[in-house]
Length: 267
Image 1 (cartoon, helix red, strand yellow):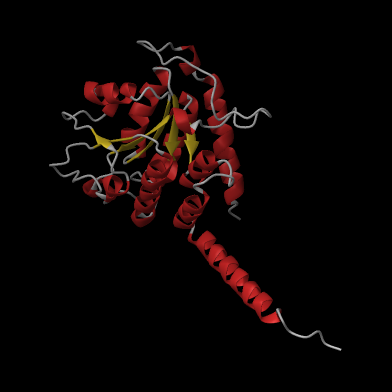
Image 2 (image 1 turned 90 degrees about the horizontal axis):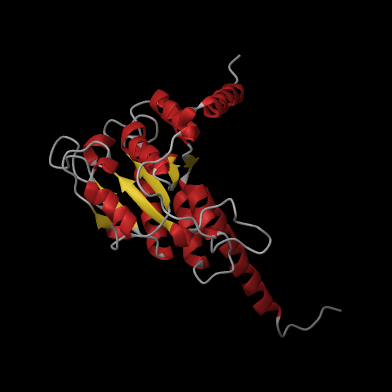
């Protein structure tokens, strides 16, 4: 009998073993890495010390192009695009810088999906000169450095190339790097699993759109709470149904409360 959980546990055991044996931890980055500083998102309790600091973060959305989307087999393309849109909306709401780029957009790879810049009008697009790896492009790296941010959140198509290559290079350059797996896509499940193993081996942090939303969110005690709730509904339609049910229950309770006011008590 096939046991999917057992298969997943074996996969992560193998990933951990590879990571422990990797020589990557002994490789020093070329160039000057960004300087570390205390995170402004760490609470007196220590909460947040292991998490992303939104004030020190930039989103890099790489090669989400119409032609490349047609090769994606490890995630439904509609879901992939929706997750990318959520990241764009989150970046706009929380004032997180966004940098986009595309690989040969005038060729078979096709144009960049327009929704990114529609929902993140502050996003900066950096054209490339044919480089497969965005980190090979001086303008792209210069734009990343100009933000002054030391945490890079990446998503793109393909995961094993367009995200993998710049993620590993940026990690060796001293950045903290996240790879948003479900805002990325690849040609097969095998490519996705291999990418996950290589990310962990290279010190890149795999994550998901929902986890990224929660890591940026951190608390409901903030003025953007209502808009953040809408983003949860975006990334999880089932959560939207929960919100709708709750709102309806609250409306009914208020109506019943108003109806009982002024009524004489029953004998």
